[in-house]
Length: 236
View 1: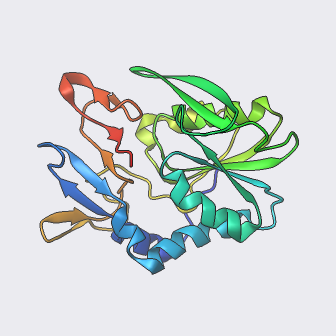
View 2: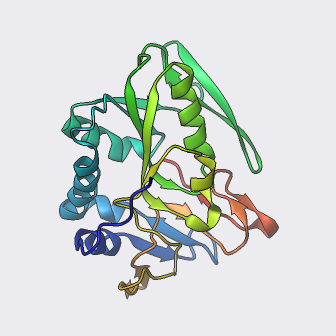
């Protein structure tokens, strides 16, 4: 079963308030969610990592698989803390050695995820980490890639969930940990927290890691939508 937000844990409010939302960037009508302010706040960043570590320490996890690119931010410190190895799941032609690939379909196209051959072994227990889950296509590809080589995917772990896009439903029986997630969408408040404006830049809960958002139904992975609206991950 997927976990819920820790009841009464004031770390969640600190994490939420450390993420800023920049309106009308990179185009009018877009709310740009900037996680770099979370990374600039050592306490909030540590709290984010600690919430994951508290869940997975002692659970015999030997692999933390991080999805490019923001899974590379949260995955390695969690892996070190629980005594697991970190395995990068990368876009095509980024890994120098022999790779195993998984093609997956997005709402507006297709993409490929790759992992080094030999990075994991059959029978290992893994978690998959990314900054957010939206439609769930990328996480599903990572699950399939690991399961093809005999790895047991214990859980998927994301900092934020966008429940309106029903990505959790695509994971099937693989649990999603949102213990340290900020549930919501830009501009909507989590109960008990009120967004605020700092220097003309709206900050508050429901913030996502560098995501362009609009109100039209779109694919998060593709960044495409009706009438030119954008909702997609802004990569490094």
